[in-house]
Image (cartoon, rainbow, N blue to C red; front, side, top):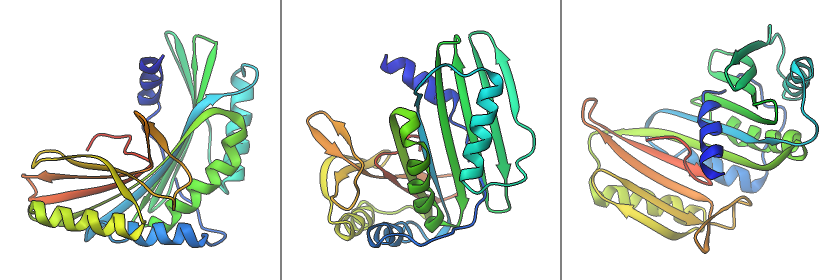
Length: 242
């Protein structure tokens, strides 16, 4: 079952959009946004994603289009254009794509063997961390009741020029964890793979790693070709390769 969920998730992975904020964040969300803002020094970007199996009866193509259109309207999207429909052996894909100057949104429904249907909404922002946290909440409010066991993931990415030492990586991680009053649950710290998982009461969501809850993930990699160190922050964990 887990392998099937991973396969479905990967098929839906390429997602995102453009919106304008209509209200502020809570004090807790502002705190997280401030921490996100310290990730890297250049070309910061962020994304938020909501994914899960659709509840209720199976929807035919027309019903899927109506559902996605209504969801786009609730998110404040206009001029979305025509919906796209793809039919392949064993599954079909219905999607809306909205491109903007500094953001991209995709809403997708994947139908597997005319039995199971999965929804994935992904919104990416360039140099805009505030919007990712805002739409994290919006997606949850709009879609939570329509999905079984939804996964809500928000990530931020930035980079530092040059190769950070292990001590510099440690300092960045400590700053993030201290700011969110988080404690370390597990870690793997090498030159090639640096990743730390933790838990903080500042974030409501979490997933289980063995017997422990985690809801924050810091990861770093070094790009030799461009001579820069990439820094990632995931809530609750990173879902993409880094």
